[in-house]
Length: 203
Length: 171
Image (cartoon, rainbow over all chains, first blue to last red; front, side, top):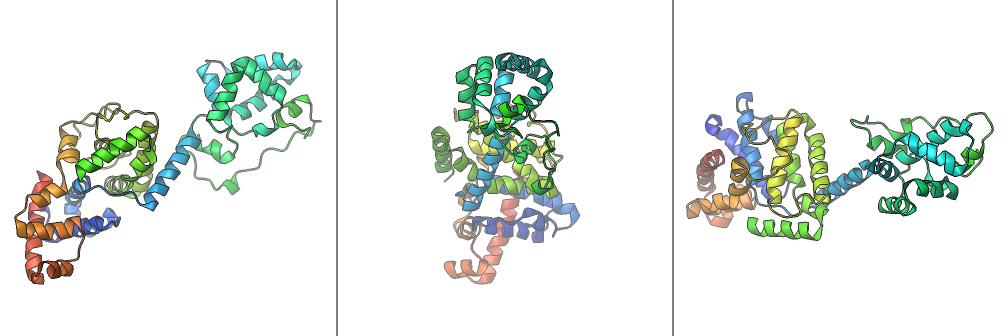
């Protein structure tokens, strides 16, 4: 590969190696930009192999912080616990809603509203702190009481934020969270029993 | 030093200290992604680290059958290729994502390529210069002072070392 690399280009490889050995993190693209185009691929390949050959590094505080952010993203991107539980049980969302309706003794006319609340709860955009005990008991009947408690415990609780929801989107847009529109205002109709069950208030 | 690092990697893996294990490779991963994917290097490096972290978390490499530095080398190459990055491997051996077993290429690159071995292979005079320059990152004037040589003699030594490094990396 390297027959085409001139001494000046090899000197850049040496410069990179010395900086790397000092524990610096030079950007190899800056070196490559300094050589003629015909030699760039060869230098890139040599640098790639040098990196594989170089002595191992001790993790820096910066690299530890980077991995911590990766871990946080991976955990946030994990499936929300209720959704994971439903998929594990091979239940459709409608099937769960039907059973919730029965367990809670709700009027069939409220079904769409229950479905909307349950959807928000299972994907982590509804604050679970407002969800009444009767709903958790009903979910326990559907999934198994221990299973619901365990899944919530293992995940550290249902995730809450819009940010978390965006993490789950493939190729999510890079949005400033301040730009995310506020939740739609509650319908003007009087809050009902379903609102109370899922939010704890007649909002 | 490599054997010690491999042993440490196995210990970290066995203890489940995957963040610490991965942190030791972040600089290399980012640099290699920058080389291969250029403007998208940082984004691709994030994908590489995310995948490695998840695999480690799932216990995928817990048996220690494959050295972690080989795994990370190979996963970096795969993901860079997925994102349209440069391929330095001849495109022959990186197709099976779920089996990061060593192969001829990764054996050669990740196991046999060792800068300490390269330095040890040099004649004593050049070896000392190479050690100071490429393993310790010393400036040329410092090397001259340390070895008691003229600056010009160090330059000539480095010229020979670079030529051998070029052949060695190519080999």
